Image (tube, rainbow, N blue to C red; front, side):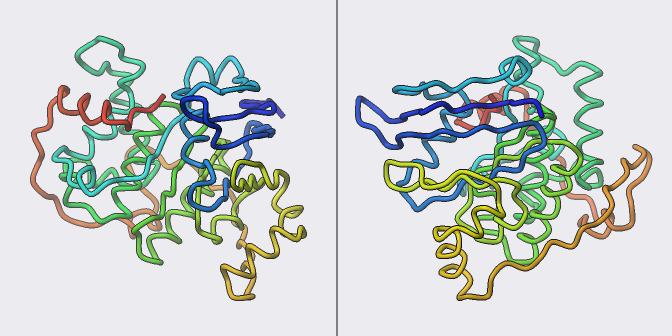
Length: 290
C-alpha cells in the first residue's frame, strides 16, 4: 500500500517549547486513522503539522509526491461566526478549488463540474442555491466535506467533525465518512468521541507530550489503554459492530438514490450573493485547504 504521510520521531511545539514528542506513525492510501487524546495533548498542533502549517521542531514529516503536490482536504472545527457565513452552498463548495485556481479570479469549467459532482456525491445537490447559514449542522458538515473533496479527492483530515451535532446527525456523518473511506479516500479524523474508533482502521492515541499508542484498531481495542478508554467512555458497553454494506455505486449526475434524497432537506431558500472576494476572506481565516 502506498505510504502518503510518514512521521518519523517528530517533536512539535512553539517557540522552543515542545507540545508533543516522539510521534512515529505512517498513513497509507486507504487508511482510516483516528487520532485520540485529551485536551492539551497536542492534537491541534499535530493537525497543523500534517497540513504543512507548522514545521517539526525535530524529526521528519514525509509526504509522497501526490500528497505534497495536491495537499490534504481539510474539514476544520467550526466557530459560531463561520456557521453564519452568508454564501450559497455552491459558492462554499466551489471555494475548495481556490488552491488550484491560483490568481485566476474565476472558476473554470472543470472546477465547476467538480463542485457539482461532489455535491451530488454527498447528497446536497438540491441545496446548491440555499444559503449556508440556513442549513442544519449536519447539512453544513456535508457542504464542508464536499468543499474538502474539491481541494483533493485523495486524503481528508477532519477535526472533531461531529461536535455540536445531534446523535442522528453524528451517526449519519460517521456513515458518510466511512463510505468515502471505502471508496478509496484516506481519512484522518481527530475526535474525542469513542464512536469514531469503530470506523477506523488505525488508531493514534497521544497523551501529554508523548505518543501512547499507534497500531490497528483491533490491536488498540485489545490493549490496556484501548480497553480503559472504551470502558471509561461507554460505561463498559463496548463498541457496536459496523454493519457492512456493499460499496455504493456512483450515482449519475442527473439523479440521486432514494437513500440520499431522504437525507436532503426540501425546499429552496434565498440565494446568497457571496463574492469571490468574500470566499477568499473566509478561506484565509484559517479554513483554507492546504
